[in-house]
Every structure is written in structure tokens, then in C-alpha cells.
Image (cartoon, rainbow, N blue to C red; front, side, top):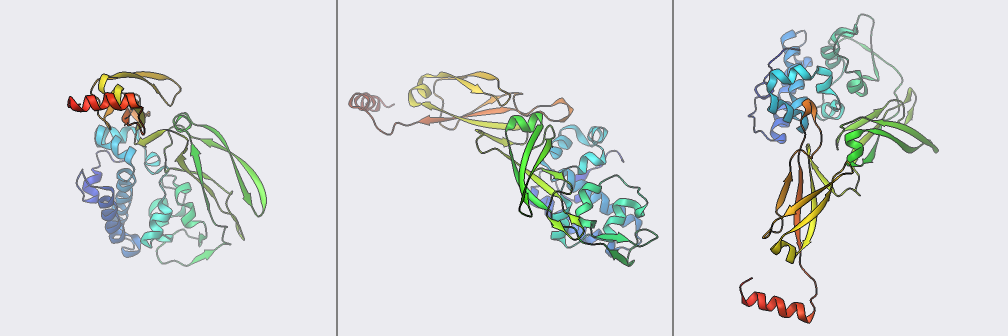
Length: 318
């Protein structure tokens, strides 16, 4: 892979561009340089590949963070093209754009000879019903169609934060054609919410066989954490008196450990405390942070003595 690619420049956006601006720029360029509009133009093909590569990185918060942190040169020393496109769902994206097909396949797979960079799993749902005529892929060539496979099935897979970080095995129960089926799934380490795990041949049945099963990862609703990239946030409630006088909290970490957090006197409702390096692990050995957000409890009812004391505090301006 060519070193030193400036993905922001390729898409024509600034480094502080929003996800919506990045997607809009990609859409415009992908339509402009799509191979069907530039048949036989190798420069357009390379431009099209660069555009897709840039979008695969900048549209993924974690990959974008790595790219921004370490720069293009070091990023490409650690990320292969396969890494860049891993877990990226082009199928729905290109369906939204109204593009795909034989010309698109030729760009990424270099003519049907098996050359290219091995993204079969990513693009298989686009091309699974197409088979090129003898002679390889080509623009405008006639195509033979095989029997259509069944529809792909998407199911949610709730995972705890610990399961996302450390991976493991899960058993998924589904019903296909009225028959219950259990499938053992290997959860890769470091997977995050919104990512998909593909199980080939476990989707709906069709004339050409079964489609694929996609498991959409989500954070288990029972988890008390919120996730933002490699950072997590946990809310903890304390009494009004502890907010005024200070206290110490035992904060549970997703790996099973506990950290004692000192909450100083005068802590405000909504104030956040950072636990540096206690977040999720990322590539290159970096790690996110944990955050504890304080909520101050306000009593719904007061005893006569409590009310008297608070009224006294009110008189003193507290």
C-alpha cells in the first residue's frame, strides 16, 4: 500500500469534518468516479479505490482516531488494506448510492483472476448472484446469473463490555424454516457496538442456498456503562451531604476490578472525574479513559428534623 495517503485531502474535507460531511463528500466522489462512468479508465479506477479506502477509515471513529493520532505514515505501517476494510459494510452503502455490479467488482478484484486484496467477505453480498462469462470481468460484458441465494438475516448480539474487550464464545439461537437452530459464535477481541459478525450460510433459505447471518453487536442493556470510542462513562449518585463535604466511592471497572475514587467537597451535579488509562484497549498499545459522572441525590421527602436543618442552612445561604 502506498505510504503517506492524506485521506482528508482525498475526500476534500477538513480534519474537523463531521461524519455527515464525510459521507456527503464520499457520496459525491464515488458517483463521479464510479467505473461505469469511466469505462477502461485506469486512473479513474485508482481514484475510486482511494476514495473508498479514505471513507472506510474516516467513517470509522476508532480508525479515524488512530489515523489522526499517529499520522498517515505510521498508520499504514500497522494497518493493511484488509484491516482498513474489515467490518466495513459496503453492501448497504452502495445500494443507497445505486452503484455496484460487475464494473465495481473489476476495480477491486482485478479482472476475475483472483488478484486483489481479499475483500470477498465484504463484497460477497453484492456479487453473490453474478457470475462472469468466460474471459473475466469487463465493462458492459454480458453476465450469466446463478440461482439467487436466500436473504441475509441480521440479528442483534448483546455483549457485555468485558466480552467486547476480551472476546469469547456465544451461542445464538435462531429459527430457520420453523426449525430451531443453535450456532456457536466466536466473538473477536476488541469488537465494538455497531460492528457486525458474519456467519456464512446461516441466513434465510433460497433457490441457490442460504444467505448469510449478520450479528449486529450492541452493548448489553444491563451494562451501566456508556461507550464513546475507547472511553467509557459510568454514573454514580451521591447524597447532597457528600457533595458538600466530600466522600470516597468504589467504582467497578468492566474487567472486574474496583477503583477507589475520591470525590472532593463541593462537587457539582454532573461533574465528571477522569480515570486515566482505564478505558478500552486500542491498537498500538494505547488505551482510552474511564469517566465517572456524579449525580447528586435530592431527597423526595424530609423528616421534620431534616427540614428544620435545611431551613437553617438556607438562612445561612447554603
